[in-house]
Each structure stands twice: as C-alpha cells, then as structure tokens.
Image 1 (cartoon, rainbow, N blue to C red):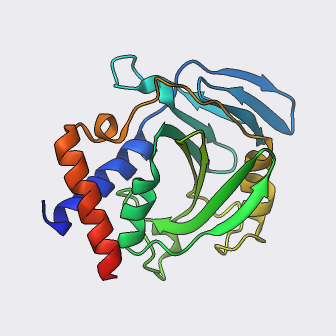
Image 2 (image 1 turned 180 degrees about the vertical axis):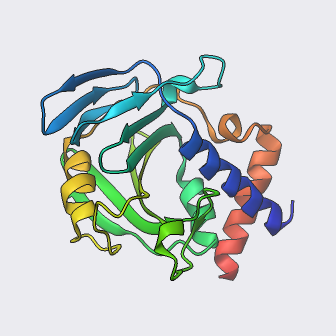
Image 3 (image 1 turned 90 degrees about the horizontal axis):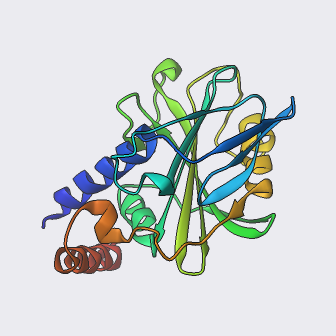
Length: 217
C-alpha cells in the first residue's frame, strides 16, 4: 500500500466521522445547556443542541454520535474505537499540527485545531475565503486502551474562532463540553480493522507504514 493510499484512507475516515450520526441517545434541555447520553459518551453542550440519528444498518453505529447546534452553526461528531491513536498519526502525516494538552474534567485531552473545506477534508491550508472554511477542533482522549474522538465543527460566522484555546468557540463551546464529558469504555468497541473494513494482516501492514512514515519525517 503506497503512502497516497494511506492518505485516501484517512480522508475516508474523516468523511465517515463527520457524515455519520448517532443513535441510542437521550436529551435533557436545561435552557443554556443540553445534556446528552450516548452509548459510549455523555456530557453537556452549551446551547440548544439536537441529535442526528443514523440507520441501524451502519456498522458500529452505537459507537458513533452526531449532534447539531443549528442556532450557532456548530456540529459535534463523536466516535470511539480500541487503540485508535493511529487515526491521529495518519492526520498528522497529512500536516495536522501538534496538539495542546489539557486536563479537563475526568480526562486528559489532546486538542488539535484545523480547518475543513466543504468536501470535509481536514486541512491546515489557510484561505482568504472564510465562507468556504470550517473551523475544526479535534479532541482525543484515551481510557483503558480505548480512543475517544470529538470533532467540533463550526461553519458559521456567529461564533468567533482564531484556532486558539482562548477564542469564544473554544472557551464557550469546546472546553465546557470536554469538562463535562464522561467516557464509557466497552469491550465491544470496534477495532482498527473494523473501522477500516480490512483484515488484520492488511491493518498491521498499514501500522508499519505509518511507523516508517513517522520515522522518515
């Protein structure tokens, strides 16, 4: 498998995470915040947030969740899998910058900032056409060898964002969510091969290529 194929895989992964919604969720709206409770994660959002429901036929749908704040133009996409650090490694090979590290609530989070264009490919390339760029915070935490990912995506000018951990998007929306989050480990969580739809041998080859590519860089 050539490196360009690795990049294709991560693009597909990002598309899946952004496109897929959630099931098995409950909401408790308290005005300024909205509590949520999915099969693998729970917590609260700032504002009035609703859930997106996916078809039960989607593989591992219970380990994916998607929520939307229509008033502020913010989408929250979440997923989990076992030993999922390779996903971040793949994105960093594409140019994702080093994360900020924060202890928030019960968890240690790696917090990345990037941008996404409307075709959902995550990129660090800047553009002067702000209307075509989504601000994206990618938040990753590990618990009991299980990786949890939260994508916070804004496509609206209503919430100010400069990519830092001090702007309104982060301070008012991302940080409160991470602080409130409870991560739920599950032995049935999907593995890397499950997520990629490949066999273990091909998956191990991919991990070797990621390791070699990181060493080369």
